[in-house]
Image 1 (cartoon, rainbow, N blue to C red):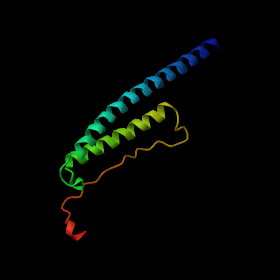
Image 2: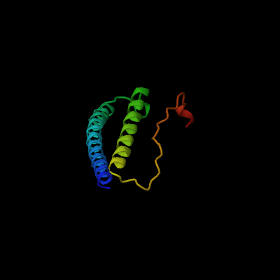
Image 3: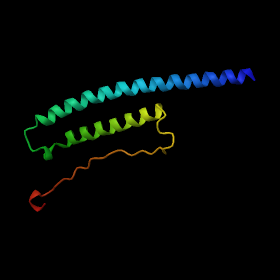
Image 4: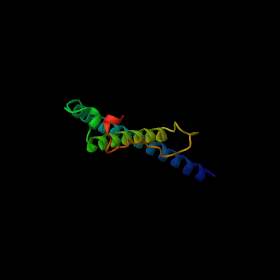
Length: 106
């Protein structure tokens, strides 16, 4: 009987330690994405053309950053056990690029 309690306590400790490590890694990832997002925003501010005509590369970068933030947030919430009752589902925001728009017809 004592042996099973000891094993359960070790597993609980491991789970807590792993969750702490995950939270720390997610914080580092979020800091990294914040640096990238700030650099991206500086580039957009310096963009000489109409912001609505951003290049596909810039739009893809923004989509990547939004996706990264969403995944980090989801991971943090799971590691902190904040979403116990919420079913897991993979929903990512998507930015769609529409090519060949005739602005005069809008």
